[in-house]
Structures are given as C-alpha cells and as structure tokens.
Amino acid sequence: MIDVLDIHTHTLASGHAYNTIYEMAAQARTLGLEVLGITEHAPTMPGTCHEFYFNNLKVVPRVINGQKLLLGTELNILNAAGNLDLTKRTLKEMDVCVASIHPPCFQKERNIESVTRAYLNVCENPYVTIIGHPDDGRFPVDYEQLAIKARDTKTLLELNQGSLRPGGIRKNTRENAKILLHYCEKYGTPVILNSDAHVVTELGNHSCAAELIAEMNFPQELIVNQSLEEFAKFLYKKPEWL
Image 1 (tube, rainbow, N blue to C red):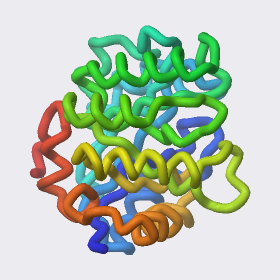
Image 2: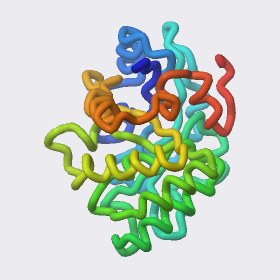
Image 3: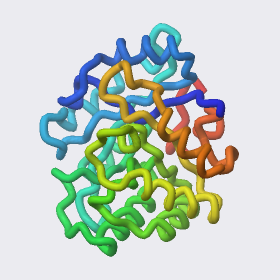
Image 4: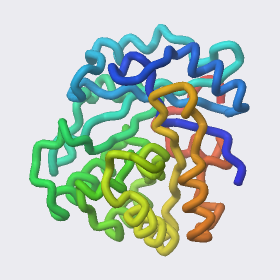
C-alpha cells in the first residue's frame, strides 16, 4: 500500500511526548512522507499547552527544510453534546483537527448511547478533519452509526497505530477496529492510518494498521494515505503549499 502521510503526531508541547517540531520534520523527510501533521493535545489534557500555543502557530513555517507540515490539534471530546476544548476562533485557524475521547477529559457516562452521540455530534463540526482512535473499548460506540455519519459529513475515521500495537492501554482495539472497517467498507466511508507518534522513532509507523487492512481485505480506494490530494479534500482549509 502506498502511504505518503502521517497526520496525527505529537511533540514536546503536548507534555508527554519527546521530540521537537524540527526533529519530527527531519524524520518525516527521511521517511519520504509528503506531509507531516503535528496535532498537539488540546488544553483539557493534563500537562499539555495553553490555547495561546495554538493561536501562535501562525509563526511556525509550514515547510521546514523541504518537509511540508500541517499544524493543528488533537481536541478532547468533552461530553455527549460533542463539545470540544478549543474555541471556534482558534479551530478556524488550525491546519488540521483530530477529535478524540480520552479518559481524563470525557465528562459523561461511558455507555454506548452517550459515546455514540458524542462522536455523531463531533462529526457535524466543520473544523474536525479526523475522529481519533474510535477503537477504544473503554468508550463503546455504535460503529454502524459512526461509519454512516462520517461518510455523510466527510469526516475521516482513524486506524491508530498506538491503539493497535501490542501493549497499548486502550481496550479491545483490534476487535473494534475490525468492526469499524466492516462498516466503513459497507457504507463507503474513507479511513486514515496514523501513528499517533509521541516519539520520533514511531513517526510514520502504520504497520499494525496496515496489517489489519490487509487481513480484512479492505478496499484500497477508501484509504486516504495513498494520496495527498485525496486527503486534502477533507481539510477545512487548503495549505498554501498544496
């Protein structure tokens, strides 16, 4: 499978990652990625950066030593209403937004009705590009409803390497990802493979996700990693370098 991008990654700014933007960009260029996305944890995550950090991303070049970048955020989904932890004003200025549920941040019951409603509401947000790691069994979800909504709202669903690799902290991720892929194939819903790298050595590593894609014989045309131009169709705003 052609794989030219990694959009969900973190640097030191997220508080529990280990490399700088420049180190991540250098590794992405070494790997031959057409674009690297850096999506720092939004403010509700303990230890991460303030909203001021995201408002100031305008000062960072979007091409560093030849490597194209998208700079944005991994938002925290806070409740079943789909509320997020950055303002609309800030979200409009992001190159890319991933929205995810994390245990320290989700403020509603962790049942299938509440979690599914949260994801469906977030898909309606025009600034959200990707639903991050919806495979976590600690937050049960109706994957059929999610696949349909994501298709209809042009929101990408993520296969997350950090979830699928052995020893990950999320629950039943491989089984849940297989169910998700089944419904994505059934309804023609595109997916994206991301590393969720918190250290430079994991950047661009989609091996577990790619293995599952092959096992499921998932249609290649529904995987946006193969084409920068195809992925860019899902962005709220187009980068200047495209």
